[in-house]
Image: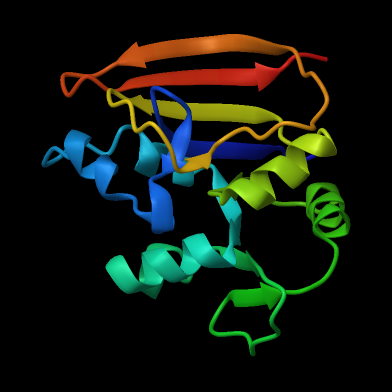
Length: 177
């Protein structure tokens, strides 16, 4: 069975975005030639799940090829139907049904890149198998929380922790069965 992995950055105080979906704090740890294991990680996946607001932000800031590089299926979770573009599907159905279907199919692993609503819906249904969380050394004070209240307790097992010259710390956990 394929596993679903979360690979995301957060502030030390647990925010994945400042107010108004502002991700500028991520620039604090940008360093030429350093991708914090992202390319190595994406070699292990062939499917991506992402919330529409996160998708739209990345589309505006980086471009559509960041997600849809022709090598993987992209599911943008949205309430507003849109036609598919390349291998990108704008999915308006039940997220849990989609993830259960994808996990049962053959292929590489599945990557969730946010946003918070998608992540927390997956957490409520115990569907995230692996957490790779990069902690940016900043206290934002407010914004969009990575983990919201109202989800069940889940026990995790540390796989590894890695620190980087920029001050970023990457925590890799897997769900403990």
